Amino acid sequence: MLAPADFRFSRAQRGIYRLAQFPGSPYEDLFIAWLKTGSDAVISHESAHNLCKFSDMLPGEVQVIMPINRLNPDEVTRREGLPVTSAARTIVDVVTSGVAGEHICQAAVHDAIQQGLVSRADLLSMASRRNRKILPLIENILDSEIK
Image (cartoon, rainbow, N blue to C red; front, side, top):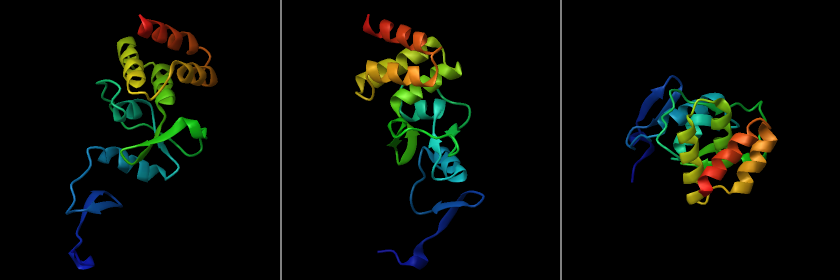
């Protein structure tokens, strides 16, 4: 058993430390961003997409939703110990941002449905709440999923 004096800290970033005797997380960059923005922040957009392993899209930077942007309880879940936008919210965010190509969005919808993380109704509801212009895009993706 380790005594308190046996604990050594490793600096992850200025003001953020972790216990050195334990391996780092593959999501350390997400944890650091979350800690820096506050416990009410939520990992979102392409970062959430990657965390949920919906497709092979790799974000160039970490995206979070700040506490000042209120989210409904059904828009937040936890993955790998981090607060992250729900599958439906993540997919709608990625489609809304326009960063991901259509094939990536289709793969995300397919993966999320196959994993049981989202339903057609969830996606349509989220799209209509967020941005009505996105609703036809989500409908097209869902229609291609059925074929």
